[in-house]
Length: 231
Ligand code: B1M
Image (cartoon, rainbow, N blue to C red; front, side, top):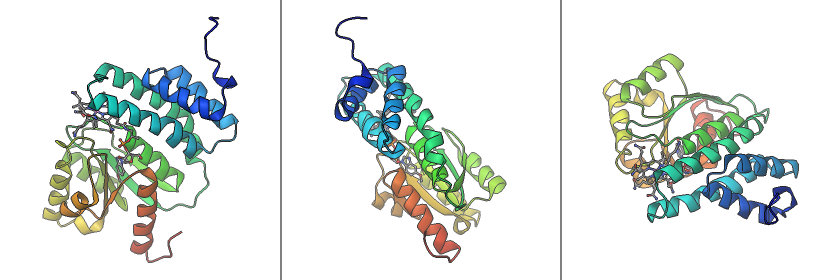
């Protein structure tokens, strides 16, 4: 072992989280998995490990990607490392024993292959007691509408991470209106380039800033739909 090798388990919580930001940046999946396991073993809430170690690390990656310091191959490695950490947290986030709340169909829109945020929303929704059918990435109107017909969910969730793909959400909602089915569903949208104004303009029921907001918003709308108190 090299003298300067970092032993993750010997770091304090703060040092470990900073080291995990570096490891995510460097796309080191095994180290990220080890870091997540250490945080959980130290009693961290899964949601805190997710947001403070993984999501915060990915924000740094995003800034350097934007500034041309990182490129697609490096960001793919970072995404792969993030997914390794998320896979460990998924069962913990889901196993909350929450009462059944309703059903959601969620997918990333056509032309867009970003799925980390959408996956996170799906996990948190499952943890909150929603049944989730995940349509994956690059979904056409037909894929969304077929899934609505098959699954009869309470909620349609759409994710877009690109300014070029977010207008496709309106295409889906407009098609739902044309077919007279818009009001049968709660439509929630999210993704980094969106905002509330955009959500309103395209005719969604709500824009959700992050996964936690998506859960709260979904609960509130479903409670209203079924005329029961929000839990
Ligand atoms: Co891309 N990418 N990317 N990328 N990528 C962004 C989005 C970008 C902002 C980077 C940048 O320039 N700073 C930029 C978009 C610029 C713009 O449109 N204005 C960008 C670009 C340009 C591109 C390419 C075009 C690059 C290229 O090829 N030249 C290309 C496009 C490919 C395509 O989709 N057709 C591309 C490719 C990629 C990778 C494949 C390398 C990889 C994706 C891997 C994957 O997802 N499996 C990637 C990544 C990782 C990113 C960044 C760095 C990180 C995204 C992420 O996972 N964030 C991103 C920079 C950034 O966002 N700051 C960037 C972590 C995640 C937890 O957050 O996804 O925002 P987020 O999700 C949040 C909320 O937004 C919300 O809740 C989530 C959890 O809290 N939310 C929802 C999301 N979806 C929701 C749905 C809901 C509710 C809430 O439904 C109800």
